[in-house]
Length: 230
Image (spheres, rainbow, N blue to C red):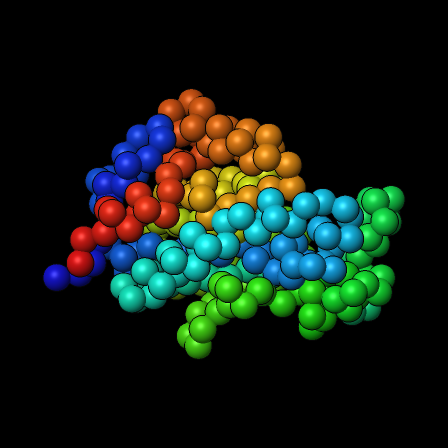
């Protein structure tokens, strides 16, 4: 028997809309669990934010990874970063980062900030990719922009996405919106995400539930695990 996910106890409807989905048609996307966003000395830490807020979703994400890996689910990790020569870094993005004291491309405790190949750009050990998992490198907030993510998903026959990562209100939300517009049925997990401001995290999750689930649904990792049929 093929393993299936769903129906998941979610808000505002039982996810997915079509009752349940084979694991083979589902992917777990882990958005930007990088040192620069949730590690000591990284980009977010250098800006003065509390990294315990962005690290909050790590334990649940690690547990969920163990679960879906056992099912053979496709796992995709994303990393935000720019080329060392900064040729793909928009001037306004660089300017904004400089205003807050953590200019992208400048030297920091974890190497050059948000630069490919630097220690800060790497995914933290708690949720690091294992052999065979896909890694998508992206220059922007959304994981579909200027990447091959959509091609990878369609090549694997993926129709449903479960999202974890940071930050809830920026890169995860942008990716969910992009996926929704492309017809993917999306579920974001409240205990597997985090933001630099708790109110932003809450607001971002609330926005998903509006208009009957305008971008998809919200649930927890426990809800997903409980709704797995092997």
